[in-house]
Picture: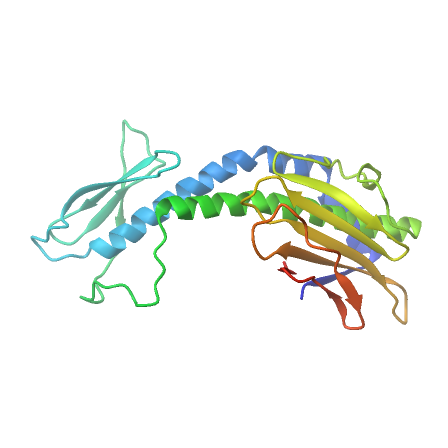
Length: 254
C-alpha cells in the first residue's frame, strides 16, 4: 500500500514543484511524447526482431535487408543481416543524406527457435496501443496527485480541505481531453478526489487525502487508487481503518 505522509515543509516544496508552468508544460508535450514513445517502441521491436534472426551462420536464409513498419505512425526502420552473421539497424536520428547504421552486438546463444510454452505473443500494434494508453493514464495520475498534495497543503494552512480545484491554486483544469477531475467529497478530516477517464480504454483513479492524529501533531496522508481494468468510473472512496486507508474492490494502490 502506498501511503505518503507530509510535513509542512515538504508540502510547501511540493507546491513549488507543481507550479502552473511545470504542469502545463508537461501536458503541452504529452502528444509529442506519446508519438516519441511509439517510435521508441518501433526501435525496440526492430532490435528484438534482429535478436531473433541475426547471428545466423553464413548462407542463412535470413541474410538480407529487412524493413519493419510502425502500424500506427508508418515510420520505418531498415535492418541489414549480413552473410557473416552481423546485424545493423538504420539510426532514426540520422539524416536521409547521411544515413547511419547501428551495429548490434548480438551473439547466438542457442539453436532453439521455439518460444517457451507459457509465452504471450503481442503484436507491435498492440504494444504501441498499450504504450500510448499508459502515457495518457500518466496524465490522470499526475493531475490527481498534484490535487492531493494541494489539498494537504491547504489543510495545513486552513485546518480544513478545499471544495474547489481553483482554490488549491495549482493552475489545473477540471477537465482535459482524456480526464474529468473532481473534488467529489469533503469532510472534516478527509477529501475524496476523482479522475474519471473520458476514453473507454483508459483507467480511472481516485485519491483519499486524510488526516491522522499522532502523538505530536496531525499527519496528512494520501492513498491513490486505480481501477484494475479500463473504466470510465473512478474507484469508490477508500476506507480508513486502524491500519490505514485501503482501496475499494476493483481497484489497487498505485
